[in-house]
Every structure is written in structure tokens, then in C-alpha cells.
Length: 236
Image (cartoon, rainbow, N blue to C red; front, top):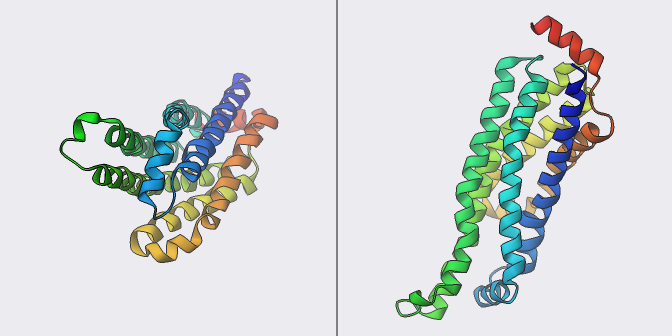
């Protein structure tokens, strides 16, 4: 039973890797590469910083790989609170991860358009640059779609944390608020893109704060093992 605290700390390490690489791959790399509204400048940046761009792609793969053991860890931690909702956490995590994994094709596509010399006889350089730029727009749609499932993951795990007694209730409240922020961000982008443009990045701040808080709590404090064991005895 005492090993459950170690499992929680491993979850914190994986979560930290996820957050750091997410900031790099999904936040920093596009900010360096993409020039809003300028197709040629964006294409130039991709080719000029190709290795940097490829590192962002690989980092994104690692993010998705961490999601799978995290889903297992969260199930083991929270099944003592509510097994069915813990399964929902796993479901929302894996579906969101699957969508994001498929969406990696859009992240890699600009390299194919700009580096594939056999396309140059069919399409002009301007057309290939336009295709590359459109890939970023498709990628943004895919990320927003995945965030709907991650939003429900946050709400579900927020509920479990709130009911758990072995983690602070405030962390559960923050996670639920963060989940709602993800949902508001995604649906705003689908229904009212101009309105959503004014929200970013502020609407995602609660989500980032919540997930970082949970991550650091796992790493620094861990869980209250005594209360977890009490929950486990009742669940069994």
C-alpha cells in the first residue's frame, strides 16, 4: 500500500515532463515558426529552423507517450474513490491522446510540402507554401478537438480529487475550473473564432495553473497514504 505514494510521485514526474514539453512543442515552437498571416515568412522559418521544428515534433510525441502511463496511474490512484469515474478519466485521456496523435500528421505535413522536391513539378512554390501554412490551421483545429476530451478529463479528475480526502479539495476545484476553461476555449474557437482570438491565451491560464498545481503536489507532497488506505478498505 505504501508504494502508492511512489506511484503518485512517478505520476508527478510524468506530468512535469508533459507540461514542460507541451510548453516547448505546442507553445514555444509555433511562436518562433509561425508568422500570423504571412505564408512566405512562415515557410522560410520552417526551412531555416528545420532541426528546431523537428525537435518540437519529437517532443510532442513524448507528450503523448506520457499520457498512457498517466492514465494507468490515475486509475490506480482514484479507483478507490469511484471506479466508474476513474474509468472515465482513462477514457477521456486516451481518446484525447488518440486525436492529438493523429493530428501530429498536420504538424509534420509542412516539412513534406516544403522539402518534397517531387511536388515542385506539380505545384508552384507559392502553392506548396500555402499548403504548409494551412497545415498549421488544421493542427489548431485538431488540438482544440483534443482539448474537449482533456477538458472532460480535468473535470472528472477534479471531482475525484475533491471527493478523495487524500488530496486537497482546492486542487480538485482548480482542475474542474481548468477543464471548463479548456471546453470554453475549444467551443469558442469552433463557434466564434474572432471572439476566441481575444481569449487566447488568458482562457487557458486556469487550466495551466490547475495542472501544474496537481503535478507539483504529487512531486512535493504526494498523497496522504493513510487516507488512501482507508478509502481502499472501504472500496474493497
